[in-house]
Image (cartoon, rainbow, N blue to C red):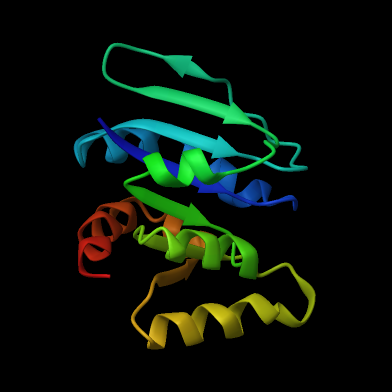
Length: 146
């Protein structure tokens, strides 16, 4: 069972949660062989409805004491660009796609994501880039090279 884990840490990043939980995104995850999508939504106001179908499960939660189990079980991690989330994921050796929250002041997350990308550790993009239907398919192929 292939799993995607999405985390926004303790922040609110509704745009990312909306993007990855959209029907088109779920369909693309399924086509790439994923059968579970787990969303850690933090303080967000967007709360997708969890469901379990024959071929796909969507789980949603705000916080846990530790993300270790979700990170360990994930085959792909999609994360905000918080330093803690990035480093914790990379320590686990998991393919990581970092989505930059362009609405943050000074966009310090972009600097971290660019540096880690240049070093070959992750792929990064914005929500508008991720939202393009074909991009998730491309990411599915790209992460195998990270």
